[in-house]
Length: 556
Image 1 (cartoon, rainbow, N blue to C red):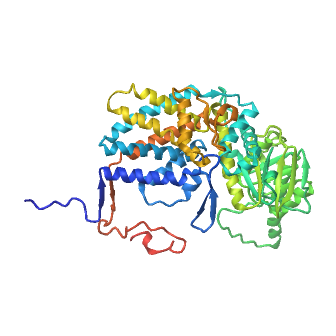
Image 2 (cartoon, rainbow, N blue to C red):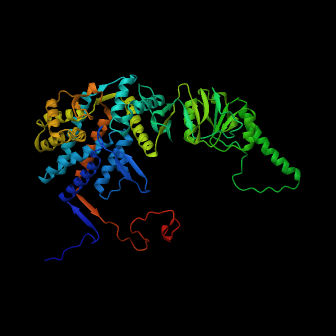
C-alpha cells in the first residue's frame, strides 16, 4: 500500500464538486434576499452603518450592496452585477440581483440530479437569446419629444424609490436636465453625458419643492472682492481663464542679488506692469465677468474692479467646463491669446446669492445651454443623499430613452410574457436541455412574484391569475400594479421600463448565473509562505495614515 501523496499544502482548503455549487447558490440567494424587499413601489428602505459610523438610508440596490462587506466569493461577484448595471444603464440594480438569485435557485434542483453545469448554462443562454427576441417583439418605440410619455416613463422608474411621494418633481428635474445637455451626434443619435455636464448641488435647508434645474451653472464661490464688485450682471460677457492672474513665480527658487536700491523698485515695478499688462489684455474685450481656475492677486483684482469687472477665482476645472458649455465661452490658457470668439455671451444673468450660510454664484438664463446644474434642497443630509441617488437613476433612465427610444411594459409584465413564451418554446427544445430551459422560464417569474409579495397580496392567487392571462404569450401588457397589487393593464397605468434597461438586466443576470454555476472548485488559503527573502507577505496589510512610514513597505 503506497503512502498517501501530499499534493496540496496543509494550509490549503479545497472544496470541490457539488458542495461548491450549493455553497455558491446559497450565497447568491442570501444576497438576493437582502435586496428582495426593495423591489417595487411598495419597497422597504434599508439602513446601513458604514465604516465611519455614518448612516445610509436607501433602497437603491447598488447603494446597499456597495456598503456591504461580504466574506463569500460568490456573493462578491453578485455585488459586481449590480454595480455593472448601475454604471451601464443606471436602473434595474435590484432586479438584476433578484433575477440572478432565482436563476441559480432553479438550477439547484438540476445539480442535485447530477446534470452537468455546462448543459444548464447552454440552456440558459438559449433562453436568454429567446428572451431578448421576445423583448424586441413587444417593445414600443416612442417619441422622445413627447413630454408626457417621458414623464410617465421616468416616473415609473422612480416609482420604486423613496422620492416617489413627491410625485412628478424628480421626474421633471431629470427630464429637464437630460434634455438640456443632450448633444446630437448625427444619424439621429443623441449623446447625453450625465457625469460631466450635469452637476447636482445639494444644499441642506428649504423644502424639496424648491429644487430646480437651472438653465445654467451654479458654483459654490463668491466674487473675489465682495464690496467692490458687482454681484448682479444682466447679459454678462464672460471670459474663462485657465491661468493665474498674478505675477509668475519661477519654477525653482531664484536668488537675485541687487546692488542698487533702485533695482529693487524696478523689480517691483516690473511685477506691477506685468500684471497690469495681463489685465489690460483682458479688459480689451470689455468683459463683465472674469473666471479663472487659478489664483488672482490683489493687484489684478484692483485693476479688474476699477474697470467694473467682476472676478471669481479658483474655480474647479469641471465647473469651468460646465460654465463654458453653458455660456458658450472658450477656456483660454493665456490672456494674450484671447479672441472675440472666446468671450461667452450666452448667459442671461450672473448673480451671487446667499443660500443657507454660503454664497453661490449663479450663471443662469443661458441661451441653449449644454450644461446645467440641478439644485436640490431638502431637510437633512440623509434625505438629500437619497434624493440625489434617485435623481441619478432618473437621469440615467431619461438618458437611455433619449439614446434608444424603445419601451417595454413594467410591473412584471415583460417578465411574464418572456416566461410564457419560453414555456411554449421549451417543448421544441431537443434533448436534455429542455428542462433547464423550462426552469429558466420559470425563474423569470421571480420579478412579478416579488412585486406581489412586497404589496402584500395573496401571491399564489395573483401569480396564477397572471399566468392565465399570459398563457400563450398574449396580453403582453398585463402586469401587477405595484401599489395596490391589482392586476392591471400597464399601458393605461403608464408603467413602463426602458428597453435597454430590461435587456441589460436579463443579460447580466443570466450570464452571471452561468458563471457561478461553472465554478466547481474553490481553493482558499493560497500564499501562506513565500519564497525565502521575500519579506513579509502574510495577509495584505492595509496601510493607514499612521503607519504609512512603517518599515515593512520596501523590504531591503
